[in-house]
Image (cartoon, rainbow, N blue to C red; front, top):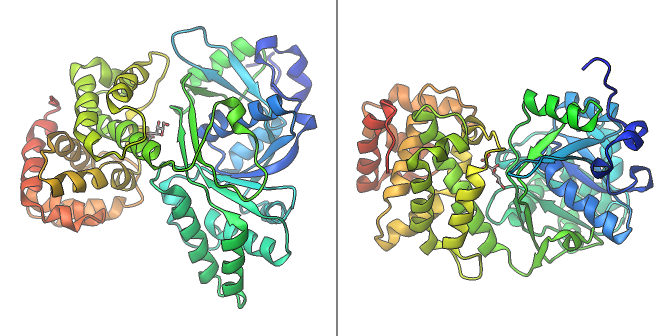
Length: 457
Ligand code: CS2
């Protein structure tokens, strides 16, 4: 990229007019702390927040905290926390620089700054995108431990109420986060922990949310394309589908950005939206990933180009729809929209990216629906095929998973496929399903075909 300047505040005036931030980043104040600095946050909550700030004139800026990645933080700082988002779909792709981030920090290295922000009365919202495993990790340097310590300090100092918002793909994510924080306060061993827990109960809200936007990992082609279109070099560009959605439980303890000005839905109960999104969209993704990999495909769009991909999505949605509560989107229409979104030719959404952390994802995305259907005596052929795909993938594919060692041990120690399937289900916390012989037999029956790369439905 020699000869091309780096994106930063000084370069904003030279950007194509449609690519400039909607806010003046210098006019924002840090009023939100966000944990998890990845592409998803940058293409989702940061965009909503920038639009809400632009439309309301309120100076909502975000201090983004990376749990580990100093490289991302340093790269962001070198760009004055600016980066671009490109919507990729059928239309012309125009990168837009987002100005919502007003600071970037690393959890360990910049711990004192983060602690200060968490007790700052001007900060009234904390958001998180730390993935499913981020809520389970224990230990002093984890996001949850730091957040719990920060909230405790805030309560002790009598600072203002605050809302802490999980933006991860889990059912009841608000309650999951609240429990994780409470457990961390208890584990802290502080003498005043009972009083702190009471104060958190009174002054901290943990609204549940549903976040949705398909945001694949950035590729080298994205880097080059963005530089060409912007005329400056952005080392942290993000590509996302045009579609985005955010549904939030309307239960905040303190001021928040008026995200509804940018289309977010504030509702009394997010559960119907959450379960629909988790079981239909994420559930289909988690089925397409291992089956597509078995079939030698690379991206979601590749898998959809095979006839079985579209059939799988529609059949999975139809199978799971009877488990969804009333009050959410119509499952049939939702499935049709998914097919269009997954086919998006502008997205290079890697199946291997989606397949990662499968042991945690399937417990959110498939197993609760599978249990409901088995209890009702309903047939579950699509979830059985999906499970077989996951089982097949746990053997020798090198997909990152926090339970990787335990999953590998199932293959080493179990005598045959039936024993492996039972052991794997037990490992992911589903001994009840491991005892369901009809289910296990059905899963085992798919394995030989998958091993030869044959997927069909
Ligand atoms: C995907 C999600 O990687 C995955 O597991 O299923 O990240 C998905 O793209 C988003 O939840 C869409 O909103």
